[in-house]
Length: 588
Image (cartoon, rainbow, N blue to C red; front, side, top):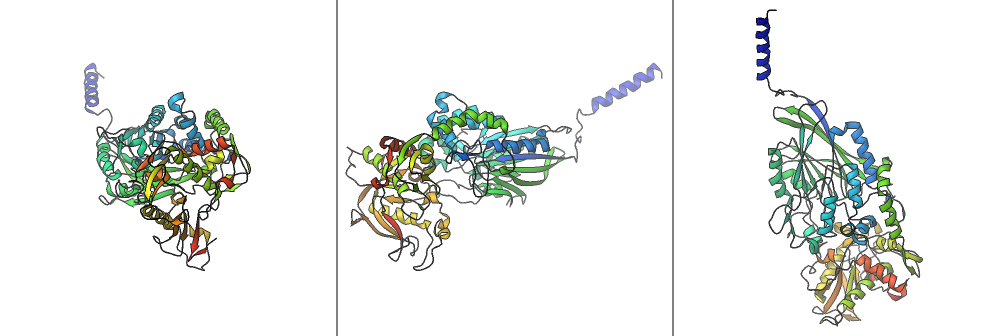
């Protein structure tokens, strides 16, 4: 070959290289790639498979296991099976409240003071979450502690619809776009993730968020951000929502819909899947048709406490400008099929043992065994203990005020049917097992008529059973979808609940000190913050005058009262002041 010919060929080759794109537009054209998204939700402070209330490994009638250590093993298996470059991991909220472990590092040795890393942040960081969405219970311990936890998290913490009251801007990151670089594939895959939290926080944690945060409608927020994520090149768009999927709310119409996950899927175009939580249900796979596009949107929920892990598999096909989801399917994996990840167990060891030591501290001696098993349908001494302590705290607080002469009533609900004070030593964990929520105590003023309305509303908890008909305990309670924690019992007055009557006409013989309660009679009522702020939708309580709000935690008040007396003796507080009847005949 002559030097001229060689030079000519070289020039042609260089020209061809210069004209060709660095990466051909169709480099991956028609290529199919599978990627996997995993999701947990409603971890509620469960790091290990441990029941702090029973002081033993967690177990229930279905033999579920719990905890992030179990989730970690499942995640590791999926990453090993699919390839780490093809997987992402998210959480849909309610992570830092719900166990004595979470309580200890929020209240006993709060991370805001010690600067210690929160155990849930420590575990999630080690597992390698890609993003976490805020749940309503994240606000239980106040904005400063939440801010500290968010700072400790390596993963972005999302909540697009939680905005600052001051300027209307998002108070947390609204969304992220994760770029997945799959080995052997030229074009990266962009996954947009929008985080939506629950509007109910404005009610349930009013004391912590009022004047600071506003919670916007989930559907409207998604309509705003999904096009933004698509505009930034997201090939896959996910919503992680701390909201159930039934379209209902446990409150009135004053706030956006509580359980709006399916509504988001139906009404907002451009969403491929909704990873949701809040309802504590195991939903392996559900498809919802988007009303605008006709496309099928996948929904999945992984139960609660780390009992399940949602696994969503997407098939993506390369198109001219990116990737298109051409198939999707999901399931939930059961945590009881795997051992705990020893790395997470070791990581939690010190904080776990500290918590175990705390909850096993003996605070008093009980004269006899007290059980909450029958509390949903009988007046039991163990709930009367709560009533007694709440009444005492509020009575002492209003002493010397204009309301000091008013009768003090108290409300309590059967939070746990398994709670027991053993005969003999009673520990912190026994108290925590009885009062499982981190509620604070308030005192409000109600009239006799309002007290009657309150009790009638509460009594919808029972099914209507005709006089003489057999009583089926399984069907008697939880009627009208009412959970145990929304059946409030009232102390300080006497009354019957006639379950043979329809809802709204069941409270009989309401009296105080042997005399019928007058409609205009004034009472101070000891009530928890969840109920007073509107949780459960009870009448009158949200607008009632507040005469006491010392931010005293009810559980701690129980512990303090037991510690101070050293003895729990039902003879000093048990009072059967209400019962179920049918046409005047006691049911039990």
